[in-house]
Length: 99
Image 1 (tube, rainbow, N blue to C red):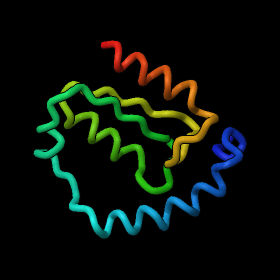
Image 2: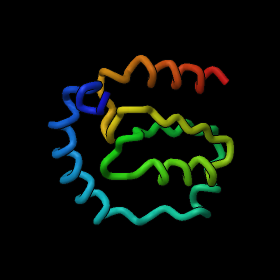
Image 3: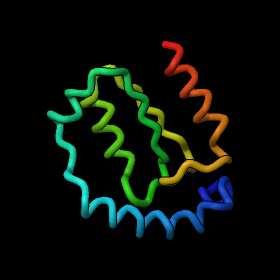
Image 4: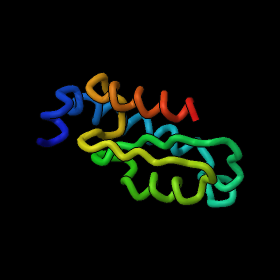
């Protein structure tokens, strides 16, 4: 099953996200390892395996650099959260907050 079969809204979301993120990236200073390592609270990193903007490797680096982090890679999910994945996302957030 590809991402658009799993999430019929993916096609429309993909185009909106490209423009929005280009604008945000131009105005945002990049993160570096030192900044990520300074995060002192448990972090849950939720990332779509099919993200067309930031590949999963970006989230993997964040997971390696942020102390006390947990990385959740979600198959068939792109960049935007979609109601199709809410059960998985909410369960992960609830477990994270209960720690």
